[in-house]
Amino acid sequence: MNRSPESGPRRAAGLLLTLFLLFGLPEAGPAFDRDDFGSLLRMMPPNGPPEHYGNVIMRDRAVAKGMAPVVFSHWSHRTRYTCKVCHVELGFGMPRGTSGISRGGNLAGRHCGACHNGTIAFSVRYEQPKHCDRCHQADTKGQDDAFKKLAARLPRTSSGNRIDWVEALNRGLINPKTALLDTEPAMGLPAALEKPLHLGTSEPRSAAIFAHRTHVDRLDCANCHPDIFNIQQKGTVAFSMDKNMYGWFCGTCHLRVAFPMTDCHRCHPGMKSGNRGF
Image 1 (tube, one colour):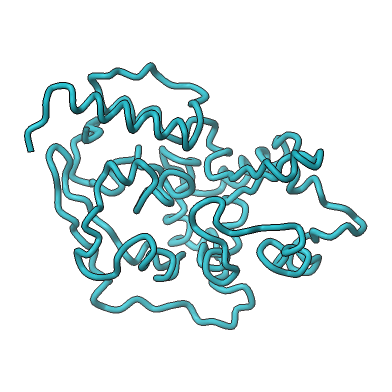
Image 2: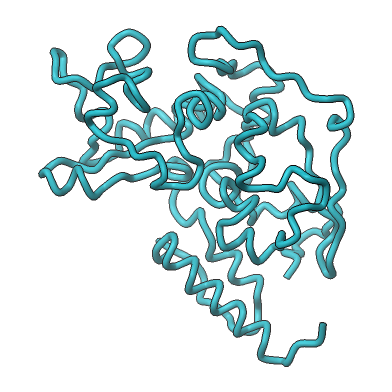
């Protein structure tokens, strides 16, 4: 489809505005060049230090009650449990703000309270010793220091929180549980899905490759199908890189927790060095 000379910059500006609304202004980064769509990628998350990538800050209710906000770190949990434990077994929604977490629910053993009961992990109850500051953090220095100690012993990569979690799992450096009570066997992968999927291409990007294997090691089919991706072959007709960057489809995880889409070669291995694909 032919576009006017202004259509690319105009579309880029719209995407940039949406990303600012979703994630806030970047902490640091180059000025946006209206003629260089690739500069948009350089301003996408992560925009802070590696130890903060994937952290979820829950502010409203805590701050309204005079407490420091809750800072949830994905990295500290993914060494112990796979994503499916929280996002299937415990009912946490994949998109932020869809879980209905509450103090009463936690005390009743739902959501965070399923583990933070004083037996599996520190308790969320008002009992001695109190651990309120483990979640309600006025500053994250202690958590940041713990991240750096963990990162020092795990394989490194160039994006996200700079930890190669796939390699860490493959080498047995982390051994996360696949179920909270270890009563469910790890889900097998059908032989037909062992081979990576080649998803086609659109110039100037090279073909994208998707591997079910690296996802099913941590996720359940229900994490992606059918809410994020239609399970029918080629059924997700609206899929596009633009929508990924808006936080749909792959962007559900690969803007916030999993390696970000600025690491283009992880999905587009045929791209030339330095080519962002836009």
